[in-house]
Amino acid sequence: MTEIDRLVRENISALTPYSCARDEFSGSDGTFLDANENPFGSLNRYPDPYQRELKEKISVIKGIPASSIFLGNGSDEIIDLCFRIFCKPGSDKAIIFPPTYGMYQVAAEINDVKLVRVPLTDDFQIDTPEAMEALNDRSLKLAIICSPNNPTGNAMKASDIEIIIRNFKGIVLIDEAYCDFSEHKSFKEMTETTGNLIVMQTFSKAMGMAAARIGMAFMNPLLVTYFNKIKPPYNISTINQRAALKCLKRYELVQTRISLILKERERLAGALEKITIIEKVFPSDANFLLVRTADPDRIYNELKDKNIIVRNRNLIIRGCIRITVGTRRENDILLKALRNISL
Ligand SMILES: Cc1ncc(COP(=O)(O)O)c(C=O)c1O
Image (cartoon, rainbow, N blue to C red; front, side):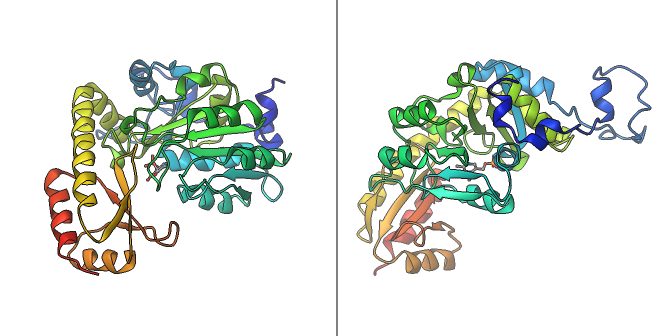
């Protein structure tokens, strides 16, 4: 048993996974009479359970071996699988750094895993002394770091993330959903030398494929085998695998659109700063801006009445609204509406 195997719950290690028909034969040519599929139609066959073609293409773009890639039905499935593989319900714990992405808490609650919360500092960075103290708890099995963080928008300091990776013996999951909008370096390469590190990215943000529900996780190939063991056999549909392949074929378009969004982020931030009801625009490494105002609830409702939907984060970060960077036209609609609101 390796150090990596020891991170996995005993019942998951012992599990005999469901063996699906496509596990036994993976070629594409053959007389397929094994899976009780309908012989007619164009979507009649089950998808490749391991998304081999898609992983090969992702491998080229991300520079990570295909054997180190796991794909989930959105990052949200990967988050849930992390709890199920590494945290024993009712006794193990996970650590998060709020304010952060709400699904970590939901996934923890679904899996009956207690959360230890170490709040970010006033400038939305990891409070490393507090984190180090909290990491001593032996029942902690999973640390989730969101960088760039939702909803604050900023990336965590690399040196703070490294301190946690170096000092924590459980699994460190870094959620890099917004990393393509940031100049900070991804931690994905570090997964090749660090057995307890998982780095997660997604097709939903920079790739513009939220409807296809594809999350990516980079990790040691041995960890990938555990994810494959417990995932629903056909977790990514053929339609979605094809859509993702099509997107990667035109990767220059993805990059052009990222540049457009970054330009708009700068323009939108500048314009928001000049609006009197906006008190502060926080720096962003993501495709959204967090802003503070005196009356977020009223602004949220007035915008909603004009069919402009932003995210009211007042209950999570006092006075704050989160605004996704849209097209130039969408951002202009928002700016015009905000200029017409007086508090
Ligand atoms: C930090 C973060 N991680 C993950 C997700 C969800 O990603 P996916 O669409 O791949 O499930 C979101 C969505 O808003 C997010 O903000």
